[in-house]
Length: 118
Image (cartoon, rainbow, N blue to C red; front, side, top):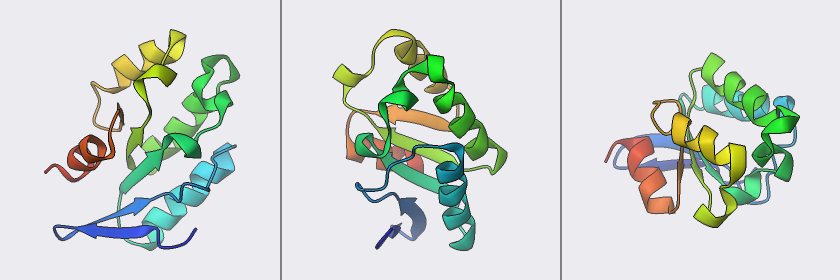
C-alpha cells in the first residue's frame, strides 16, 4: 500500500488504498500490523477494500476479520454505499454501529469524523 498513513488535525490513522482488497484474515492481520507499526489504532476502509464474501455473513469472513481488528484494538470505519447494505449484513451493520470498534458510513467525511472524533 502506498501513502496509507494519513494525518488530520494532529491525529494519525491508516487509510487502506482503494486497490487493497481484504480477502482473508491474513489481510486483516497485515492491516493491523501496519497500524501497530505506525503507532495508530485507527483504520479507514473503503467499499472497494471488501470482497463480496465480507458482505455475505454466511462465509464467516466479516466476523473473522472484525474479530482480528478487535483483538488488536483497531478502531475501524468503513465507507459502504447504503444500497450495498442488505439482508443479514444490514442487521450486523445496525448492531456494529452501536459499538466503538467498527462502524459503517455512507460518506468518507462521516467515517473520518467518527474515526477521529471530530
